[in-house]
Amino acid sequence: MPAVTARGRRRQNALLPYLLLAPAFALLVGMLYPFGLGLYYSLTNYWLQYPHLFRFVWLGNYVALVTEPLFVYALEFTVGYALVAVLVQVGLGLAIALFLHARIPGRSVVRALMLMPLMMPPVITALMWKIMMASTTAGILNYALSFLGLGPINWLGSIRGAMASILIIDTWGNLPFVSLILLGGLQSLPGEPYEAARVDGATPRAILRHITLPLLSPFIVLAITFRMMDALRIFDVIYATTVGGPADATTNLHMLAFQYSFQWYQMGKGMAHAVVLLALVVVASAVLLRFWNRAATHTAA
Amino acid sequence: MNEARRSHWAAVRAVAVLVATVLLVVWTVFPFGWILLTSLKEPRDMLAVPPKLVFQPTLANYEALFLGKQRGAYASTRPDFPRFFLNSVLISTGAVALSVATGILAAYALARFTFPFKNQLAFLFLSFRFAPFITFLIPLYLLFQRLGLYNTHLGLILAYQLITLPFTIWMLRSFFMEIPVEVEEAAQIDGCSWWGVLTRVMLPLSMPGIAVTVILGFMFSWNAFNYPLILAGRQTFPVTVGAIQFISYEQVLWGQMAAASLVAIVPQLLLSLSVQKYIVRGLTMGAVR
Image 1 (cartoon, rainbow over the protein chains, first blue to last red):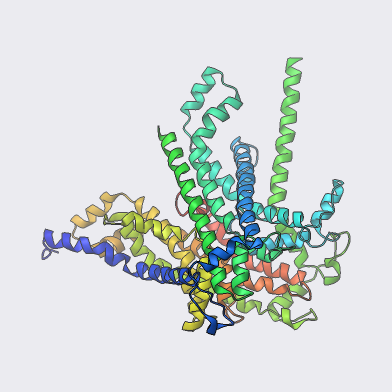
Image 2 (cartoon, rainbow over the protein chains, first blue to last red):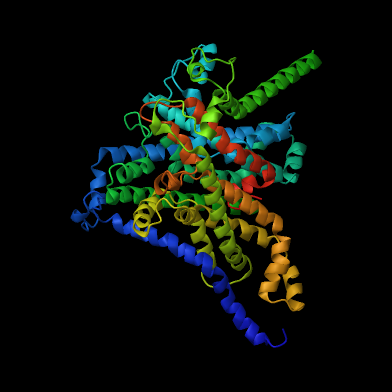
């Protein structure tokens, strides 16, 4: 295009990224608008059945949260569940990754099979396990346990059973994610430190502790971050299995916000619960980002 | 003596590895096998004590699912599964199409240009990946009721952008960034406009990446449960919400639920095979290659 001068092209290029972003930005605004609207509703007493009582209550919903026992429990359960789930899943995931990395026979087959749970809809995963946990007498899981002289466990009907069930189902769906990230990390590690350690006669345990884990730390932090974020807002599995029960024992903040909004139609209160959950997610991600930066610079150095 | 001890330990190790491998495989595969068996059972075999591993298989559950031949006593659990499946296909396809059409341009801008607030904008898109669904679900439900988008395919396609758009932009950006800038500069020197560079150089070179993004985006939409649970109605339910319709206050239709679960994951299992190498990359928004 000879007609376009260098200057004209530069000016065109300065505007171009904004033009390119415009359609996606329009969708972004479409997402931010409901979010802002939600924040506003969290400051009102919006109750779907009583529109004529609609009133702006400032921070009333948030202040009321503190005195609500179920909110306090849901907050504890949300945080506690996320910490336990991340610990279990990253711990087991690391063990599996190290195991698969050790060139066991049939590794590629195992690896391919582990991809299967990964892209399942969480709600279907939950239904699959619900069938296996079905009843204390007829479920295949309790039948299998009976051969080990264990059980039967009241999986979804007892408080501890329901908590364990959700952890098991969540772990089945997401353990492969952690394992495969860490396996990929292990396979990308440089060979030199290992050769040097071998020359020095280091034990396998020392190698794991002083070479493998530090080098792997960015991958571990990444796995923790993704799992933590999803564990804090776990909903599909709970909804499909216990719906928060028994006796609200598996009611996390997401579930409680859902119940306030779509069972009791108290949209303002529900939204206040949701905002607290969002704040929790923001804090967790800020903390994890700091770890991530430290791990990344540590490895680079 | 020392030799014998060493071979003894090697044997123990081999057995331990074998046991661990078998456990891992059983843990991973057994649930699939069990719902397949469950989906082939008559209601009377369903809750037998002990569970029946050998039984007379029947296709009646699939018949009920696809032909609407209701066998349970309660009409409230009658799902329209073929329609739910079609809904899933329609909504997921629409959501991905909209995300890719807008995402290609945005990802190209974020990958190749420098402009103020570029990183902040990229991270704003990313933050939607981690935001709890409920923060959007409540206001969207109220808005959709007002705008007439409730229980429509279009409404769901728009809501699904919260899932597919951030993913599409970050994935495509990571693929675009893998293409050397020199290739683009060469095309520019040959007189290509930005549009020419994008359509004749970038898109053909990143075709495999775009294909992966489309397939994974489709799968993430397919998995969505939260948004359609609230924003859809009986006419627009996707398979994920359809599958839980077999649970009612009166009873659970285990056989049909198992059949529905299996049918709902067939696309996922098939598509997983085609994008095996990219699944982890997709799940981390392009962060892990």
